Picture 1: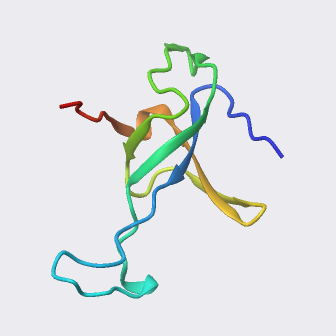
Picture 2: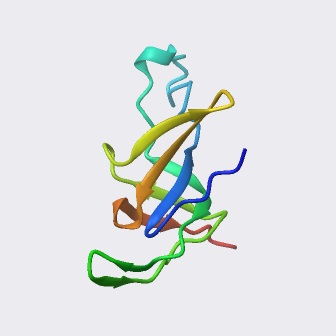
Amino acid sequence: MNIRPLADRVLIKALEGEEITKGGIVLPGSAQEKPQMAEVLAVGPGGVVEGKEITMYVKKGDKVIYSKYAGTEIKLDGTEYIIVRQNDILAIVEQKIS
């Protein structure tokens, strides 16, 4: 099945949170903090949304940081995804090449 976001929406998949703290303590699933970093899987076309022209700045494959309570969580074929508006994405994470 394929999910294609509409307008200014973006399909993301949350990256896995840390299971072991820096001190070496293993955290059970219920104690882990929900990650706010995700990978972009699909991007809507943008265009005119609520009377404003929207340009999409994220693209498939980007790693992003999104608002903690943003979006709609969906489960498809046993995998959890989140659909957010582009303005719920706070930053694009870029890797620095040494």
